[in-house]
Amino acid sequence: MRKLVWWMLLPLLAVACAKPTGFNYLGVKNFKVVKFGLKESTVGADAEFYNPNKYPVTMKGGSVDVYVNDNFFGKTSLDSSIQVPKKDTFLLPVVLKVDMTSTAMQVIQTLATGSDSVKIKLDGSAKIGRSGIFINYPIRYEGMQKIRF
Figure 1 (cartoon, helix red, strand yellow):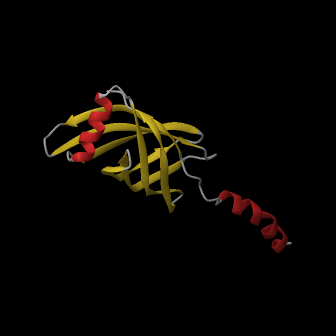
Figure 2: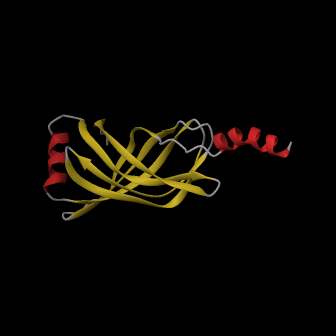
């Protein structure tokens, strides 16, 4: 009888321990220049994501390379943990240190010509999990993004 009960609970345990799915990237909000310098500047923004999981998850430890118009723009990292609600959108604060070489100047020139869209590419990974079990999940996105100051 006990073996039968365990075999009946096995599918329930498998569903409860299901691997979380990744977040859907929705865009960038609240773009701002925190510190402007001739050699290096600091840029801040809020990246908006949607959690499609049926349960809340925790995101901790992540690193993402940001490319703008196919040129490396900067790197951001997350060293704290964030509680992400189930089936809801959330904002992730992002701070980038940008080398003010030709890449940053090209972006400024693009925005100065009247175009408010640039091609954004994100490439990195983050640890996502719940109940103390975390997996490295890849972060990949490529698409056009409107930038408003």
